[in-house]
Amino acid sequence: MSIPTYDDSNIFAKILAGDIPSHKVYEDDRTLAFMDIMPQHKVHVFVIQKQQAMELSDLEPEYAQAVLMAAKKVMQAQRKVLNREGIVQMQLNGSEAGQTVPHYHVHLVPTSIHELGKHGLSNNQADQAELAELAKQFADAID
Image (cartoon, rainbow, N blue to C red):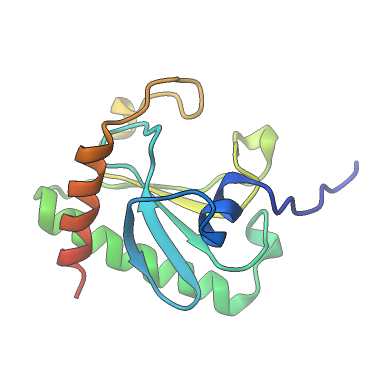
């Protein structure tokens, strides 16, 4: 088995570099949280680290901690804005597990697992104005 190397042309690397726009929910020196434009559910947020790492086993401990702390803040904001308790937190390692972007990331989806769509299998892009408004509401709700 060959272990793939990090591809800095993946979509999340391009978002971090500013080459592709995103609807930012939260950002600090080690993480970025933004709306998924091809969401499994319309309020789907990604949390990623600012380190080149494809999966959990590649992450430096300080970045792993930063992702979890950023995810905690975003989840609290999602609950506040949406008045919803249930949030699916999902993280996939490797293409065999369903990871479609080779950059470590956490999915935060305020829904039930039974309501999720198939990630990466739909060509339905979310409404950009709606994503921008949700991102602003979530960002404003982060303390």
